[in-house]
Length: 270
Image (tube, rainbow, N blue to C red; front, side, top):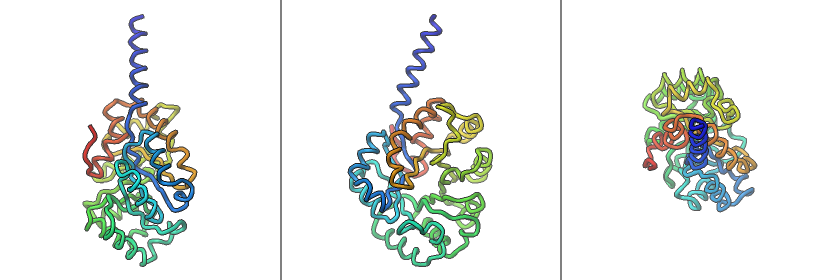
């Protein structure tokens, strides 16, 4: 009987902890069509209601990011996305006018990252990507890359001291993610738009091994790539807390918010 009471108390404690766990969402977009869909004050309300304490925010174009900086400066960590509108994800690396666009914004605003940007394989060798990497070096900015492993290799070849957040953990299996994390000490991986690590609130064994080997290198993210995705931010935060509660508390806290703070060199939460 005492064991049952102790187990019940432990479950209640874990449930309460999961409900209160702060979230640093490492993959948020507020692009021009989302600005038309939901005003910035509504976006700020969604983030606060979801218990998102911080969010790495980028947008196409940059106006959405700057609007959110004004409406939720305590939450928004701005990133510079090198897109002026939708439809540039596959062409931007061949467009030299992107360099002027990015350089101008870097002069006018403060950012913590460049991205999320899409680049694969030899895309990294284009003059545009090489200049973006150089700008990240000059301004000490994180690179948030939606890329394959080959592109990540090429980024680190061009800039060995780079800090890189691998969007969606490369959409590869956890075993491959672990290989890449072993290879690069300044590589982190977000879990945005992935659900293969979560089995109804339980962490899948292969992912548990990855989280336990690299407790300092993973983080949660929603990826509001389309306006309607904003309707899922609150639910995503809730489901994230559920599977995080299946991990040891220290690892859960790191993935939930501490790793993103460390990666972006922000003041740590107490």
